[in-house]
Length: 52
Image (cartoon, rainbow, N blue to C red; front, side, top):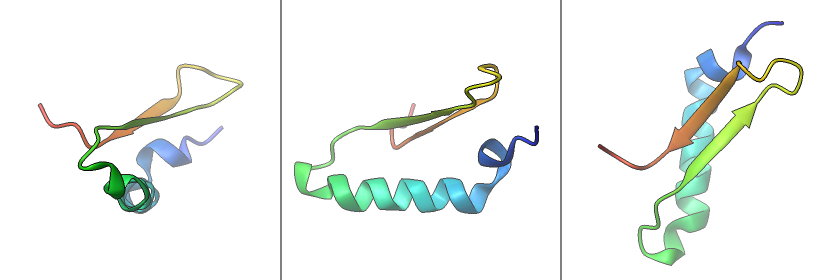
């Protein structure tokens, strides 16, 4: 199975912008969003606004 969601920067940026917009009213809340392939749990992505 092709790992589209991990390697598609456009989709990942779109999800990040949506989450930042929707969570913006909570005064810069930190978030992490995980996507996992149900058939192969080794294929996953995490989108976050947390910086190291």
